[in-house]
Length: 110
Image 1: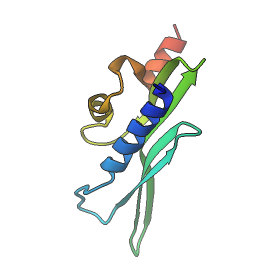
Image 2: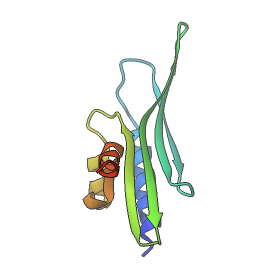
Image 3: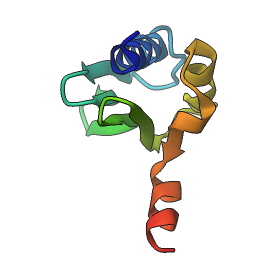
């Protein structure tokens, strides 16, 4: 079993599913951006009105593998109301393989 590939498939599915049927009070469009080769998975939000342009990253995860055995999903940004971490766990990513960027920063400062 290729865990990197499986985790990449899970991330891609969760990110794509997160962009479907999102209720919104404003005309905001969500776009999945998935690059398994670089390990980056994002949800972009954009909106254009006559007065303004909105562009933001709602979700950003990085898939990190070392020596083809250790793997981590680092959540850089998760601005979904319920978050996507539980969806990743339910889809098959091990809870212990998910780290938030702030957890990583705290560990680096110890």
